[in-house]
Figure 1 (cartoon, rainbow over the protein chains, first blue to last red):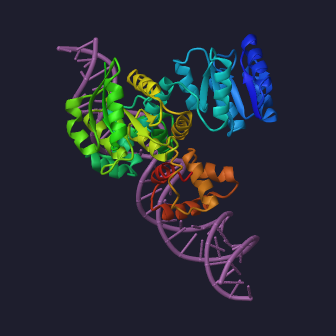
Figure 2: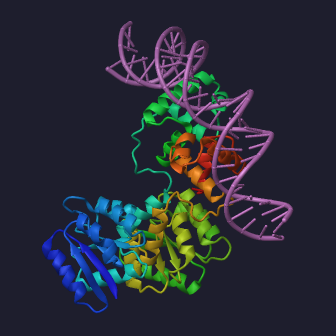
Figure 3: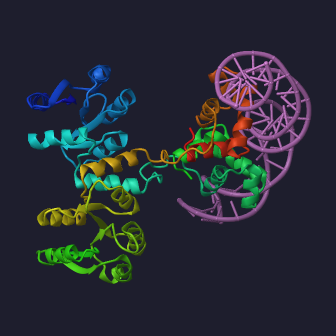
Length: 212
Length: 212
DNA sequence: TTACCACTACCTAAATATAGGTATTTTAAT
DNA sequence: ATTAAAATACCTATATTTAGGTAGTGGTAA
């Protein structure tokens, strides 16, 4: 028995899904919600195998909802419900923790099949989304998607890079053939721009935000 | 017209593919090879849209072949040919630069469809492989595979974790309800174990080696 | 029970980083 | 050609980190 919870704001679609799921052997629709907040309150109690989740929700959007559900139930399998498959949001949803997605206009039999696939450890998705995921995956660690809001100058990036490589101020100065005082000056500006106050914080930010 | 090149050591399968592709309107099989080396010599001249590539090849294996082809023609779309879809190698192939894969026993019509999908920017693959790709993608940067050779104690990991979160010694001490002196003592031991001599180095190592 | 390890803590001393002000030169853009 | 931004550099002062020695306590394994 695959236990499902649905979050979908359109009453017709939501009820349709509930009837489809509950009316099929081997599937059970534990509960349905029209928005995220009440779902988040009950999700632990409901404890479904699969969470079907619309992206375009009023109030908290689906992406945020996915992240929060994952905090409560890290092992849950989330499938995104979407109208158009070529949606950038679908990709964001996968980043946020979804395992696949369903097109709303999918015929019921295929829909149930996709839920079963997901519950067996699969990730139903179109080949176009799969390609985007793969590309992002192949570039992993390069953070090409995240725009650098930190506008460090070329020199500042070099200097920060030196720190990430394990050098102290003197070593950075020597490697760039400048005075330690200059390095210190640059770090003052780097710290201001990154809103940090120590080497450690700067290094963490540099690595996690992909600045270097 | 979709131009295809095939690399497959089994004569029967290779010829079958050639006949199928050449015998279908809109598809053209530029050339076929039974191993990688000769394909690599000619791939630039052949310049296909799609490269169908077996993984289990004699001599240079498919993964290596994919990497080398990508160096020569970075924009080429590579589809992996495999017998069993639940193969770890398929996943490696995707990492190496393949965009999708085909099961050898797939019926001809589906096979041609998959090639067209790939040539249109899609990534044909089973939902099980898609899941693995997604999971790896979601974990990017976490280096869960790399085993910790650094034998920090539980407390030392906590303390190092505090540093990675941007705290200084005093803040770490306060959050763990211990003296700053104790924190300093732990850091001395942590630095010794990690063979580093500063916060920055420790943070870099902690993040890159996945210690925290 | 002895020996070892992890964790706690204090001491001293030296090295390094943080924070501020200021000024000159170089580079890039209007 | 003028301006603005970036890079260079020195100053003072304070805060923090690094490095060493030493020692008591609690738990655990030989």
